[in-house]
Length: 250
Image (cartoon, rainbow, N blue to C red; front, side):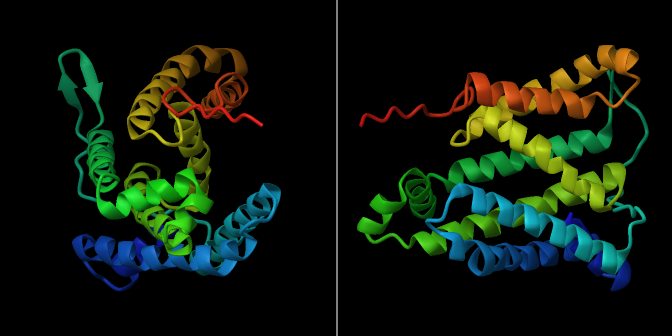
């Protein structure tokens, strides 16, 4: 949401072309992500998880309120220049903007797949696996966690721009967090391939399930399906479809 608003600030308010506004917004959001981790979350290291959850919820509310105060609540469109003419592939009718979004997502998956096999990516994987072991071998855990927030913020810019073209930019973009979290948990938090498979599964369940449930509940069943998938995954297979299942012996 915030990334999309920053892109609009550069393109609509300052008149910059999108091919300039999007990279600038990505750079700014990279440092915003690092700043959030350093100022708000790093202070909670070692504290109970509930405190971290409450902090992130507070940040979410703060950002939604800030964007509402600055840009208002009216929806704005990010014009990427993608045609809305129907695209037929055999008997299937495809949306061009959704194809663009899928292509961007696939490119990001490939980029992160390669990144996590680099020296820096391996350090981040080590931090994710074990904080204490990473500290013991000289890895800067603080910088690694901050970098992960910065990279996530860059991805948020891409997401905000694509969905800003599809549904417009407003505070409702923050609701996409539920779908992203569901995909991550269903696929497995430590599996990139799992995220791809889980995204496809969730998309099919949303489309097919809402087709039948909307007639029963009167519409709006997509969010119910996403929430149900998240709850069932946590209850039945908390490590996801492809996530690693660690067994601890005490």
